[in-house]
Structure formats: structure tokens, C-alpha cells
Length: 149
Image 1 (cartoon, rainbow, N blue to C red):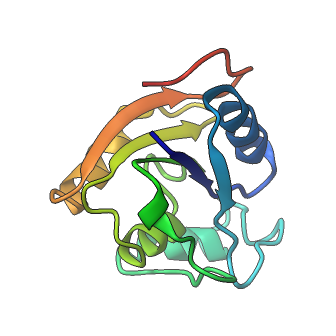
Image 2: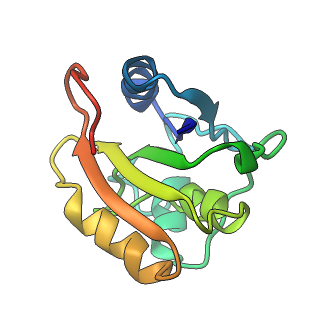
């Protein structure tokens, strides 16, 4: 079974977790890179007018992804990782999900977080995309020691 770890990382924490996970499960890696990189000011969640705050307030916000789409036809399982923002996935994750054919794939969600749990973010994605097989993985705030399924 061929696996892909697709991830968005704003500060490098999720990138580190994704790389560790991919190494452990023998997966390919695809980084979800925003077309317009986030600055420290953009990520200031205490500033209600910061880019991330405005994106998260707008449920229809879909930040563009830089580069080519991955060829997902080669994969059976897609692990999608992100830092939890405002209790859910950053809007760029919606861009990734909506911009790729994930039907028939096992989708496993993982995240990093300074204080939020993973379940609300997974439930939000399951509600938004009921046609997809989205499963809850784990928060990966420390070293990854094994598969998260």
C-alpha cells in the first residue's frame, strides 16, 4: 500500500513531525506551500486583522497553493498534517482537499498544536467532506514513534 504524507507547516514544527512520520511509515512527502508565504505578522493570532485571523474567520477562504498538484493516483493512503488554527485545520488544507481527487483514499489526519486537541479539527473535516474516508490520527507534538493509525 503506497502512502503519502501531505502537510502544511507555518513555522517548521509540523514539517518536522511530517518528516519523522514519513520516515517511519515509508511514505512519500508533499509539502502544501502557500502561494504567498506567511510572515510572522500574518501568523499573529492575537491580531484580529492578521492574515491568518481573517482567513480563519472566513469559512470560504481558500489560500492558493504554490506549485504543481501531487499525482495522488499512485497512493492508497494520504496522511494530511497541519498546525491546528482556531481549533480546526488552516483554510489551505481545504484548498488541498478540494483541489485534489481524494475519493477512495484512506485519509488520516495528524496535527501539531500548542493546546488544542485533534478531534474537533477532524470532526470539522468529516462534516465538510462526508464523501471522504477521513480518520483521526494523532497529535504529533513530540517525537513520532510509530504509525498513527
